[in-house]
Length: 318
Image (tube, rainbow, N blue to C red; front, side, top):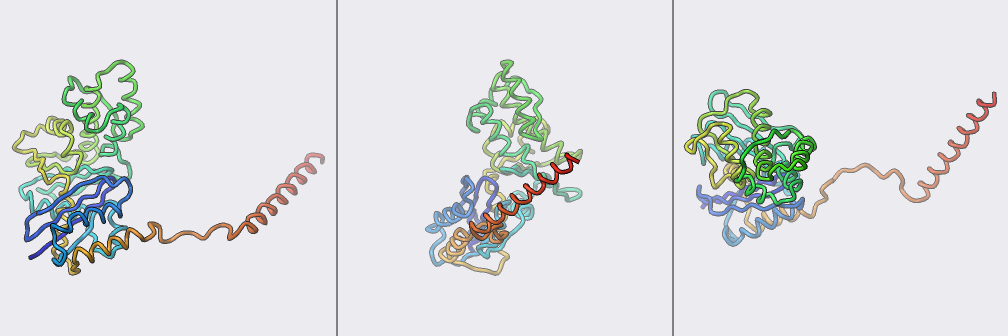
């Protein structure tokens, strides 16, 4: 029996996928609210009974927040773009293009023609975090934002590169009485525009397009805006049930080729060790070792200020 575990630790969520003899037998997705290490432990512990206490397994970690956990736990790490490619190759091999949106990152992977991957930079514009911010602005939950978008009648132009610019577009619309339904759909359209303009950058998105990540699975309004903008029919736009877990599934596939083996208990022990480890291992020494050093510092600078003031007064008299 071959059991592989993939853990995807992103900017806002943790996902786990358990694969046994090539079949996904367990998958789970939760927000971590910045408790990334604790949530990873929690998800593995929840899968303990399903895996079996004595069953040998392999594990790898991926995701934008996963590297630190992997290092602290001494577990293999796989870069998320590579994990994405592994997942697509196994589960949706016919895909020509992959569009994936996470909490704070976005990427497009062109698989046919010239293989190419493009990912956003440090800005979270046009990602799940952007949608969360806009929901707060409209005073609704993200799921309510999605429900509102279903009743849209028109689309407004809203900046998506930065949440601050988007707010400066949305607030006047609300003040002028624009329907929240139209604003909600316009927010999703802004995400689409940011993805296509910022990442595709003129390269045509066509063929079988696979949409991955939590935002593209849970928000039906976002799915609709992508399909209409890219002119994709249902046969060529794929929103699989695996979408929120795909990167974790890719990490599980990668784990199958690693050398380290664990039991559930030893894997939990490694992750618990990581959870107890300090997040910042290296730090600068304090400026002052004790209160006395601080007082001496203040006295030195007080004397310097007095001398400077006296020199200035003397020069003024001259």
